[in-house]
Length: 383
Image 1 (spheres, rainbow, N blue to C red):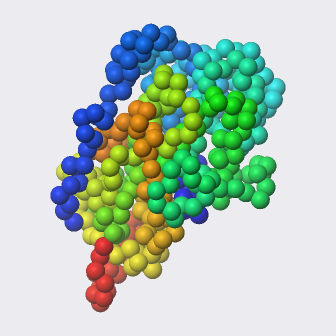
Image 2: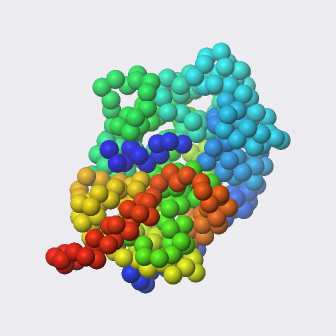
Image 3: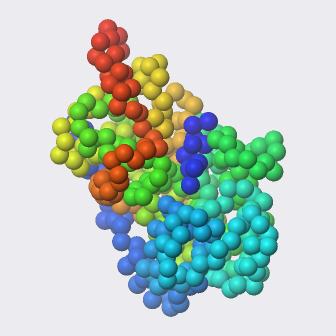
């Protein structure tokens, strides 16, 4: 159940900042691909984005514009209307055939679908666009995989199914299988022309879910911080800007197929994240690492209440050990964790102080659990 929450919505550690990308993976794909495209003689492309004004959408628009592509948006005009006043924007609802018909006959080099959650909606848009579009990029999720307990999941691993794949109501349990059905719907409508990108947890500035933002903001607040063990528990995520660049990379280089788009290319841990956040602040934050079983017994909820944390109980061990070599081989790059932390914290500080957090343990509950941890009779060691 926990892994299906991944995309549903739209102690001193010596290596906390040392595990950064090697030189060939340092972020800078816009400049590199501009040069590559010039050498190969690529012309600027005409791209349609289904959505485009939420979290991932604007970053994808910006990445495309940086490479001089022409962008058209198709959405309902309800999320951040007027965000891109200089772009062509078609107001429409992808669930309504008459509305999607506005796209019939339009010529696009590629379509980026950031808003597909139900296969019938993907079928509708893909079938209308199929005669005139060269490539359909569908943003899926690693939640598609049927067995989140299996480490080393790759693009060939089994995906989830539902008793009724035609359901039209979203739930945590249905999210992953529905995304898998959406991938299949796109491929059925445009065989051989589809790129299915499966990101993990998408993080960075403007993230409305707070599933990463909690940590830099919490360490910046200071005081004693509840940190659930083990300290070497692996985590995987993708900076929204790196994901956006990779989406445009697959169009620039005409890559189709399935790609797990998450990282980094080396393993990061909870300790890397938490102490990286601590290093980004000047607060007096003090990390108290609590045994994971103790945290569970005291009602600390994984993933949303304690963001990015999944207890090593065997139920979701593979969820932060998904293979990404295929995407890396065609250009997926990662900026350093320290940069993601710094930029996310800077953005978080621009929000109103009384905004409602979408994830993270309350200060009151955190204090209660920490007090109980200190008062316990030591029978276990943290980690």
